Every structure is written in C-alpha cells, then in structure tokens.
Image (cartoon, rainbow, N blue to C red; front, side, top):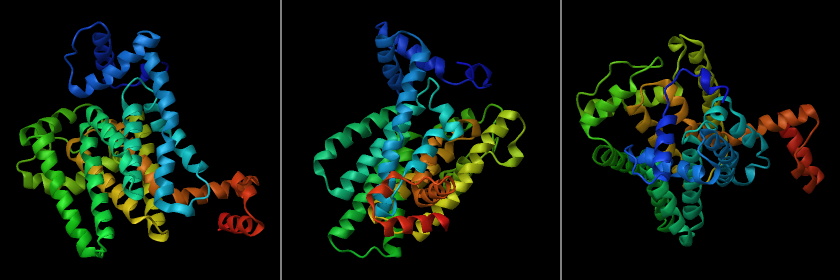
Length: 366
C-alpha cells in the first residue's frame, strides 16, 4: 500500500479488480480471457474477504511463500543426492528484491508463477517416475496455466514433449548423441514456431503487440518491426538475450531504471553459477532436457514480443527461479560457506557420521 503509490507504472491492477467485481455482481467481464481468468480468482477472494485489493496482496503473499516447494523439488530431481541442503535456495526464492515486491502486489504474477512451477514439477514427476496416474492432475494444471498465461501453457507443453522424447529414447535404448539431440531440438523448435504463429499470434498481431509493448519510459529496441517470418527467426536469439538481461547500463536514465538494473546484476551471477553447476555436476538427463527446453523456449517467446524492461522484470520471474534451480549446487556452496563463517551447520549433519560432516566442512572451506 505504501510502495505502490510511488511506482510510476500503469499496471493492470484496475483491470483485474474490475473483472473480479463484475463477476461477483453477476455481469460478464469485457476484459481478455487471461484477465478474466485471474479476475475469477480475485472475485472469489472478494466474496470471502471483502472487495479490497489489499486482500489480493495478502493472498499473493501466502502463495509466494509456497513457491520454494516446487523450486526445491525441481532442483532435487535435477541433481539428486548432490544437494544436501536447500535452505540457501529457499532464501533466494523468498527474498530476491524485485520478485519479493512483484509477487506481493495485487496482480497475477504470484499465482501464475506458482502454477507454472507446480505444473513443471508435475511434468518432471510424471516423466521421471513414469507415474501415469498423475497425468490427469497434470492435464488440469496445464489447462489452468493456459488460462492464466497461454504462452506458458505452450512452453510447458513443449517441455513435456521434449522430456517424453528422451524417455522414449531410453526405453528403446536409442543412443542420445549430439546429432540426435540436435535433430530433436530442431523438430521441437519447429513445433514451437508453429504453435506460436498459428495459435498464439498472427504476423500482423506480432507487430501490433511489439508496438503496444514498445511504450513507456523503459523501452529497448524502440521502433523495431518484423517484415517477414524470417526476420522474426533471425531476431529471436538477440531478443531473447535482451529479455533475460535488460536493462543494460546504457538504458539507465532514472532511479527506477537503476532499481531494475539490480535484477540484471543478480541474473548474470545466476547464469554463471548455473553454467558452472551444469558443467561440473551430474544431472538427470530427462529433467535437464525438460528444464532447458522450457527455459530456452520461454525466454525466446517472451523476447520476441516484449520491448519494455519494466515489464520484463515481472515476466522473467519464473525464469529467474529456473536459473536458481540450475545453480543449486553453487548456491549450496554459498550457504555452507556462510554457515562455516557463522559456525552454524545444517541440521542434516546431525544425522550423518563424522566423515560426512568432515567432508561437508571441507566442501564449505573450498
């Protein structure tokens, strides 16, 4: 309530509020499907606790506290027994400065982020454990995700197909060589392009969205338009990088831009830590493919449309948490180093023998 008065952005808080009020009054909202979807959730909160956007902020805060659960699950499935403590990972998910703010304002970011990560965790569970019975809850979660964020529904579907492909390769003992993986990636990339172009945006709508999002005081690549689908594909890698890392130092013109730059700094650190972790540590092949496809497809899709780093800060919150999943072993080293300096060790050490404790202390020293 205090901070929002000083933020110089015209967000969709009023749109979600209007949709929720319209629904509880018995009238059909005129907003888009995605706004109406969250408006339905907001309307249910209004029925239970009264018509006040503060109610939504409180509910979002409770949801945000749950987000570390799927994040820790994904990290443990990716790295297995390498992770002996995840408290540092949990602390970063809860208290990164900008996500901490955006996940508590009366918008859909907390619910959509939690839904996306839970769906992704369920995809990993179904494919890594072959638990067919969880297919029905997975289909329901995918549908909910698609209603809240259609682009995320498409990206998660691609991740599921990628993981299922690796499972089939392993089942029929097909060697997953680099040419095989490249061919599979090419097919999935082509499918992703078709889903984007045929189901999400027509070519005219792509340029219209690009123009719409190129407004405000935090714009980058201003005035850019696609003249063909080939331009669209050629620009994809560069725009994905802009989406993940903007604002750059040359974009900083105000105090708010400088605050947004904070996210660039820690994202660079997380990318380096993630690369280091993936290079050094053994990973579950199926889980790794799923997470990489979701991450790369997601930043590419958002990058092709977004042109405002103020919006990017919100939209890339799930990708930041995925980077934390990739960087979990390095984050564990940070945690153990801090605990060593404070002479405090994880409770898990009480359950291990002296050799295990000595090994973990040595790891913390390193």
